[in-house]
Image (tube, rainbow, N blue to C red; front, side):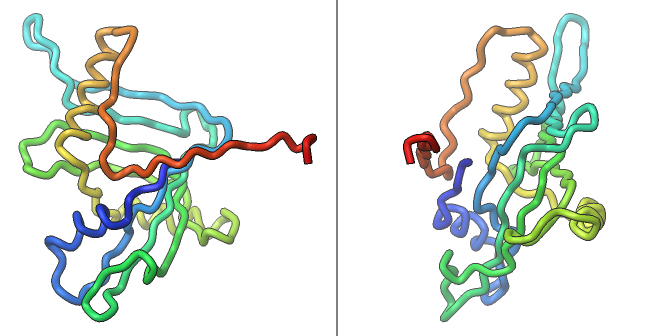
Length: 188
């Protein structure tokens, strides 16, 4: 589970927000839980002997398996003109099926996302959480990603295409490192 620095996430979103408006769908964490089956699809062009990667899709629910990837989201209404993590509301958990990264000329790239369900953190996934996801997939505004993050994913796709044995991802800036050590239940 990777949690995101709330101050950094809030600062990145409030720049273009109209004063007094609610910050919506703020990313709290990304969690991998259990087994899954994934697939990475790399798309691009070949001109002569030059290959260019233009899109990378990462699918977490390949071959009909349930995605093990969930993200925590929340909204923040300003209190006394300030956006504070402690004032978050409307917390939801979304099960992520696919993330998409595309080559773009825009200053701030966006990441495509398709979700399987959207549920209350304390609730279970069921028919209505799946129905919410179907509707959300039509209206989700692709979230912004850093240019470095988007470029890295395209370079990762190229490394896969080239069958490179290794690839090193740069360290993400907004992730807080938390180490969780599970205890042996027999020692309790």
